Amino acid sequence: MDNSTRWFCVVDPELKSLDPTGHYLVYDRVVCEAAGNLGFRPIILARNTISGLIGDIAAVPAFSLGIWEADPSEFRHGQPCGFRAGYRFFRELRSAISRLGLGSDSIVFAQSVYRLQIFGWALFSLWSWAVRGPKTAILLRYQHEF
Image 1: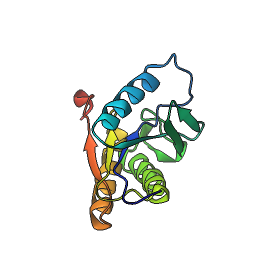
Image 2 (image 1 turned 120 degrees about the vertical axis):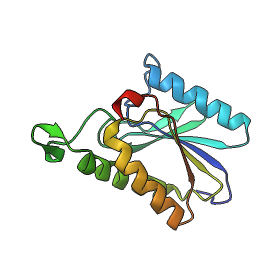
Image 3 (image 1 turned 30 degrees about the vertical axis):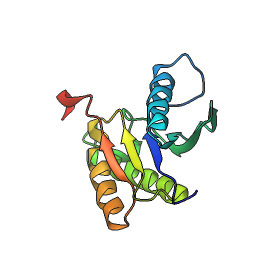
């Protein structure tokens, strides 16, 4: 991707398909359109099961699991471990952002973050700062989980 372009990247591991009946697709599209009105070029990082265009917005496969899910290897004492799940999330997010080549004028935005991703977002923010990557913006919609 063009490193001089100001990208607005919506991170949505819950977006699994381009079916317009789900609320994730509608929300992502509205947020991307607003970012476009502010001069950003929008893009969505979604589940690995998706790839295509939502209008003129690219949906890029990036995540193996949604925000509510954990891999069996990430469980400890019958509960998902936030460090393991967060590290997986970080690796997948970093990989996608690295492939896209988003620069420091870009924004990576999360509109749905659950406790399993907090550690991953902390690692991503530190990594992004170290490599002069995009800024991070997180909407904390599930505060009772923190």
